[in-house]
Image (cartoon, rainbow, N blue to C red; front, side, top):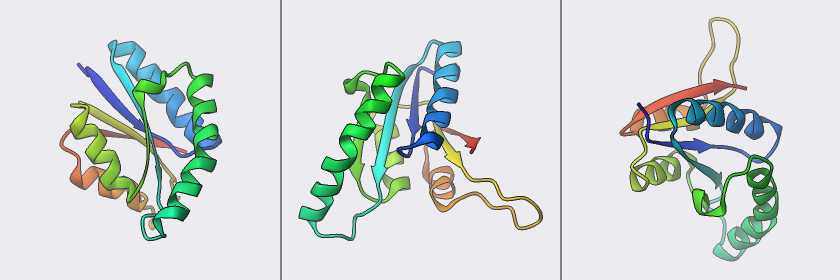
Length: 131
């Protein structure tokens, strides 16, 4: 059903939880899995963006290694998260985007702005993982 899945993660335990779920789904469909990490600092000077990316890259690489994801199946960029995620999904011809969302209880429950942006702009299916 899904040939290519893009999984957007943050660096940390929550990102690992989302990636774990994405691997389960990719495995069940025999899908290619592409992992994306977006550093949301597009308004900062370019040299500072580069420094942030250089600091985040080893952490991202460690997560990729932990989940046995090859570097060629990963993307790390600076930008608006939903735009980068949707762009990567388009370029990789993804059938599904998986990302995490923080769930709030009660009547005021809303999905996050990144999840909303992806859901409204993606050209493929979107699956949210509650974290």
